[in-house]
Length: 224
Image (tube, rainbow, N blue to C red; front, side, top):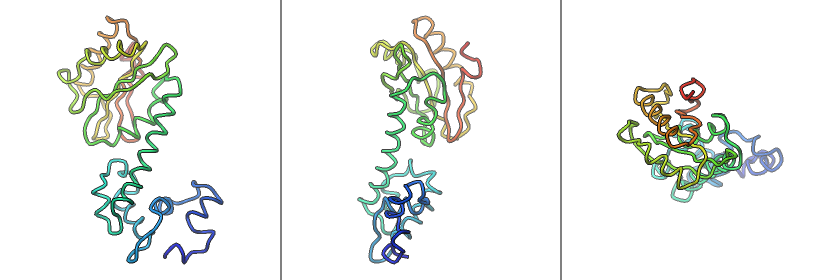
């Protein structure tokens, strides 16, 4: 069904204005972002294909514009509209973290899961905090398989001094989705703890993140 054939109050735009965006189904929300179809396909048909290709939106954040453009009815503009909505969501969540005190994994895990949990390769991230546990900055320091030769404490704590940070929180993702620590994860963590103590910087935690799950070395008493 085309949008113009629908009852006015049931059209995604009008429905969102009257009842709020949360009242829209996934299909309606994607259709609202896409705005229109073309002469061959309605916006709902295109939106339905987006949901199929992204497996119910779960893979949308890691999709490339070229992949979306394989869907009939999506060209550069519509692909960028969809990806811009994902990027905006990332920035909203990240901004929330920058304006809050970070005291426990729950304070950052939503951001980590959303931004890094679905990446196809491992990324090692360091967060630098001030004396009030507010985030000064974050850096993606390494990409690739985590091991001691790649993840060197020198790079982590050099940045801590440059940022005049009081404490550091480190994290990395497991693309497999399984957050169980590997032998290399433990080795890297123990090395980071030792160097942090030597250099007088507080290592808050090391978090492993996947999709909808995480592992905290602090919660499992490995940083005590």
